[in-house]
Image (cartoon, rainbow, N blue to C red; front, side, top):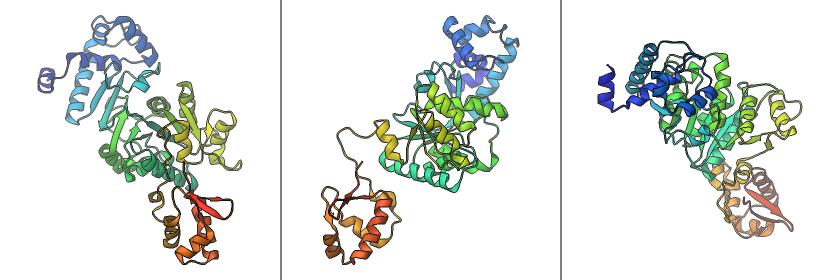
Length: 369
């Protein structure tokens, strides 16, 4: 079977040893990396049985499991990336505990110019989900090539993935199990959509079940893949805080949405901000400015299409407000035909949505970044 697989798919023999090496039990990623750097290749490690002091498992059994995994990946078009491969995500490879192997299904450039983790509590509030949707919506307009990374969990994670799909942003879901199952099962349809709009990613071979500790292990991949991490909502303790801590350890930027002191779902975010582990943000532009993801020496106007559902009268006033110059309250009334009180009510709503700004002398202009 192995000859057939490699002959048909032109699979390198080396890949077999790389997968076998990654399957050695009790071998920590940091130790595996040191051993690989010392010896030079996975093939040498396996052939010379240099791993027996770590995981005493027969070589032929490891290779048999590797062959089975290769066959499974070929059958289900799962891409395999080894740590030394040129398309292995460079951000993740810079982390000392990066996984040896990544299994991926879908089409994402894991070395994209801009990658952002969006994480939060499974017990999200309506406010947290709304903030997540607004963030993704705005990023889709202001930074359309960005890739959103999360963990497919209930709450903020799945909201981020679904909002990304809706706004046609590429999104990556990092799993805490192998590809023969999906957790949670309720997110299966979204996972299928992610494959068409991004990727599912895991370090674990097929058949590996989801266990509590693996979700913590998974978090390092979410953090390591990205330039920055946004915590939307979190209790005082939770997996998203662990992801944020890992991001800090990796030298990534961390951002958090603040909440009221009495909101238990925001206590973790507030704590990150209070401890200066995360920067306070309130909108997508805050992230883009901090990350220097805005074009240099260029003002980007907040596009009306961010708010395509605004009432018709507000839309009419917004269209009258010039992007470069200001316009007076009197002129708005003359050109729109609306009364002053109606205009004041509408422009206040436009200001609250961040579309326009008021200036001294009853003047208004579109808000710029």
